Length: 249
Image (cartoon, rainbow, N blue to C red):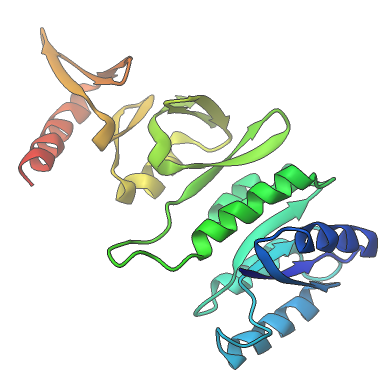
């Protein structure tokens, strides 16, 4: 069960958040802090006491706009800890999802907080806080997307390919597509370790999701699910080499 620290410098918002968290059966304890300095002090003391101490913190539910240090500042500082707690942003502002993506927070919950939406965030944290399987690796990276005024986090493993739209990118999954305000060039650099390759100035593809490579009259295309995507000449040879190495590796 989770040990939670909720941080908000507005007392009514903090009390409501703590009430909802304490009513969730996956939460062992939920304590509050009224600012960034208090939160960092408590997390630091808990880490010194060890992971099994009664004051240990598994996850911080963190407001972004606070007096003094912001929630973004706190998340950056926590990222430098040897064993930081997980972070969920709880905010009234929609414009920080990209920064949340950069900081690898678990979820991004908008105020006013709905019980069902908070329960989904707790579920995500619970899944990540479980001890890893013996052969397991690190948690799958996620990217925040906006859908009907709600920020969701889509696992990168669910994304088949990405299409450029100026300074935006459209993420294509088996269940639909999502438009995010991140340039394709940025995703190309960040997601190379996850097996994504550039095949065209407009497309970035998950190598493992390519079902077919086709050569026709000097033109190269790939099939990714039901989509057929063009491969530019400058990327064609590299893509063929990568696919061959994948098959024989």
